[in-house]
Length: 299
Length: 316
Image 1 (cartoon, each protein chain N blue to C red):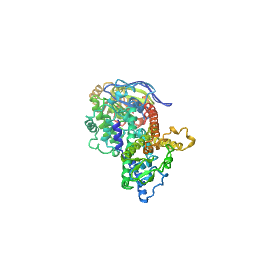
Image 2: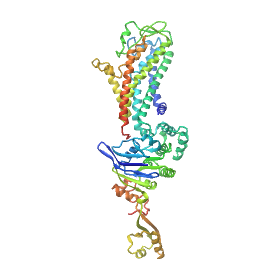
Image 3: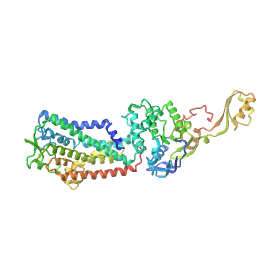
Image 4: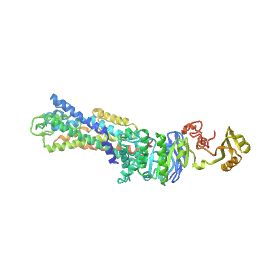
């Protein structure tokens, strides 16, 4: 069943269209920066963006930071929200179940397919933005990102939720946010770690949208519902008054991937981010299963 | 093949199916008749494990459903209301996907089985077009092909003639009769009475969720003990058959007799020119309308007279 779902994923125009759109945003940003040579000053704008003009190889990190807050979760919510509700409204759900495809098996196959989509999107962003960074922005000028000690590092203290930036200092090697140098191999490792973390960060949204998708026959409703949860979470994350619930919000540790670019890697929030996503996946998958396994399929 | 005991389904306060005890036997071509909204689709969905019964029990192919639904479904081909397919994929790709979904589909024979099913429903050669470009009838044929791909022992078809033109309906009827001859049991639901009477050997009639009739079609259509005669000299026929005439309408007579051959011999011996003579049988329409109290138009039959008004079974 998983193979069937993956086949359906890659044969849908929507999949590639949304990935193309996700990849297009960093490209547009890169073109603007390259043409104007105006990058956001350190401490403002999206993470890493202030460094890319001098270090194109960092652009994948900047690009991921650009698509993470909106583009990626919207695409994931749309695809996960469509997974059961879309089949129900198209009428194919009843034929799948009468095949028979077990209901639990179908749910898991759908989730795997959403994960595959997210991975595909994150990899596509990383690859296209690496090419963009090297070709359009500073082509490996052996520049470095650095951080004024105590300045930027303080601004991106783990978990503030603010958009961290990396300042630029001339230097011979790429340096971490903490100022220590990173070899090229280390940089690759850190980018891969960040990609994995971002992919996992989308699992919570995916599970929520999947759950809503078993409740309604409207794919749009399920996607919008999941997005509403995310928006609410983003609002609460920045609200001091809500600090008691913040550790449990799905978007609370979304920015923890930046900690991969510290030397040494700052693991605490990364681990918490993984854990919170695991909790959301288990909880909402269980809810989806409980609802779907006993549901009358009348669509 | 299919038995249900006192099967009931409530959706909130609406009782869609009430105490239905179906009995579909091996080798039947069973037609479940009922007007729209009588509970046919809900019943079909319960047989396939899509909708859970509120009360009662179901057994399909000897296994309890929905408990062992996974064991029986591989042997069932189903058309559940409208056919459904992924519109951007070709008909063949849709069949391949559906066959690959779920357990126990022999991959080695997939291609051959798909070719065969497409051939059976008359879609061979146009199976590479995207389903988006299919007509309603072609989609219906594709749905039927999807039901046949696994070479099922039991076909459960909900309104299989939907969207088909007269030729398509005839093709489907021939196909189903052929499959039935090779051992496939067929259970179909329909609101179209002529379709059921032309195809089925056994019928059940559903009315407002209740099974109000279930019998062999042949048993239902017993001769009524009347003979319909049309002759050029009705006066002489009337005097000859004095006392047996039940009704006269111009040259057409309804005669009480259980032996049409003897009656014919008697008229011919008396030199009465007989134009037509036939044993009167009860029409399915009459039976169904009587048990349901539904209007003829709800069964796809024009309200006055039948679709084939030359039918000797017709009483007007």
